Length: 325
Image (cartoon, rainbow, N blue to C red; front, side):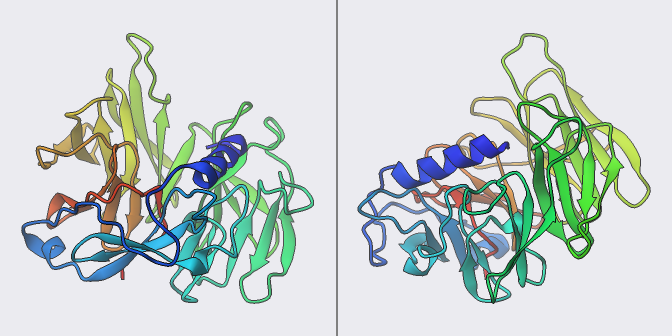
């Protein structure tokens, strides 16, 4: 997603209508609870971001399981930025002003970019969570497409970057926050997801071009080995990696979609889904599995043990902002 798109999302988040009132009141929206397995006994709180209005500006809140009810958290409001949405940093037990993928694994720092609050919005700053100190760690780049680097994930190895925007260049880069050094890891595809030492690319973006073919590629980051894992002539949505080195995908633009896992080269493992499952186009790898926002409102959850289950029909969900604990 490019920087302009992030700003657009922030604007939408600030102006969309909501039935939720300030002060932590619960929504009366109907909920759906899974009927079996580990997800049926899920007992935790999931941080989410919800559309807001001028009269109800609190963006973050909690969905509590079992039950699936939503309650806004006023603590998410003071740290809000124009070009980002907050997430919950479990390591420090507090909200931070950027999405989870920008936050260091230890929760002590995060990357800030694309926001008018910094001297150079196209640069990358490392922010200390406790002190708020900002340090410039990376300027414009890559050279072929200035200003197009975007954060894929802040991992223990460093900050993984890809190129997205009007001008782009294929590749996966790694930024060392301590030194500001950045190196190209692999330059053949647009690597937009990283988990467990594996990166994933989808070429091209889903579109309505007749006869368009789509392919998903897998990169072993340690060895640099690239494989084409799947190809189709129907739009593919790469939803999220799972915790086992696979990637969860949805095939098709309209319900019913074919939802499944790619578990090997040309190995598409179709998942059984609830009959009433709406269209999904994104996913979040957060405890205890992959959370799937549903078109029209609600969340489903994929786990290896239970497959896909609808967890709530709560309509006011914009993004998942952390794991359920």
